[in-house]
Image (cartoon, rainbow over all chains, first blue to last red; front, top):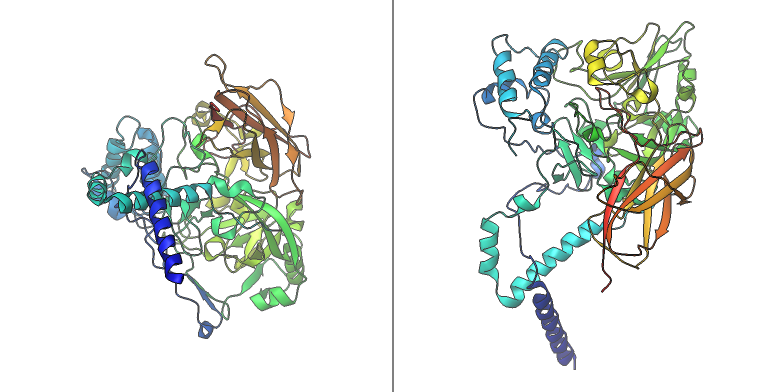
Length: 137
Length: 443
């Protein structure tokens, strides 16, 4: 009796999949992304021995590629001390003078010690790749 | 008080799509087909662009990827270090924003992963008669808890709408949330330390630190409020958010709640309350988070270049409202009734009027201004600084493209304007938003 029931459930399930297949065959289906965003280890359960300590796991980094070109290494080494370079790619395309002002602010207000001879290289890089005229999708 | 978040429509959709894919492949042996599709990485053309501009961000949220962070539901990424995450639109269907969905905005990159409450203390210092340190146990046992429902909104919420665009966090509309905050009135803590006469301001510092050199804005984040500001008597030091401990990314163990004010003052991981007898001249007060001293904080790039724009520290939030659903991502059906739902709030007191306009879009007419408005039904009033939900039943009569608008009025009579605002910080955006929807034929 039970076997018959299971048999019918299996048949029913098969029919459902087949029906779903008929419906979805006409649609766009079965795309899977290779990207690994969101792949984060699940946290362990807290232990009683943690006492008064409250913890979370490491904060994941999602740092994008910067446009290849001269000056990229300077940007990566000097601009990523306090913040990731996603601060650059998140911005809308900005006019050349705004990028110059941003770099000047980082040096003069925020105190980032970028050598005098490197500052123009960084400004040039940002202006070459991240203005309304130059930014690529 | 707090509604549980329902599974999002988008989430369900995603699950359904995956199930469909598996069913199709399993049922018809289409695995090879599947692999071919995968190698072409078709997701790029089906994803939002990686950035928007120089025109306005046309989307409700910002365009970053959806990411996972500790104690958080999947949120929209602005930046990964320091962490800035935006709340997806559908979480605003309820008056209270779930802690897991609440947006995140830090200024400096060394933020706590771990706090030892046996060592942590909230310190009251500076120009006070009795400097004092409180443990978490002191805060929960020595003071009677108070609660307030209050909206926390980033000063730069909706910055991506500015024209011309301005530098800064390119938020959509999701850098906001509403919670029930529970803790100790700030005034009781100040009284316990007894402010010295002649003091001017109270400064707040939290657990975040930056890698920049000492004495610079990149090293520490400090905010202060004038001691004469009435909001000090409404502020609380909160140890609970929606009846739960605060998520680490939202300011565990305690944060300052400044009802009606923009979030820049709501110090996370609050650990130092410092009474000052001289004006606070630090960068975060003197240069950042300032708005033009003009109606609505409006100015122009030309006036800013001219150097004549007088500024004041940002404070209260102007009245806003949002249509949350329908969100325009799916078609509606002619003659099928639909409930338009959303939220509204103001830093100047309760929203007591919410109006809706529905207009069929014609190529000649622009979306705004709208000529006629109809009252929507307001949801429960959770207090003057909370989100207030509202709803409006609509039956689209015929197929076509429609513009939906919502307009809120607050207790002080402030009404949302038709026009946007512009200032160099990207602050105070509160115009009436347009939601476009498409209605299809019933048969």
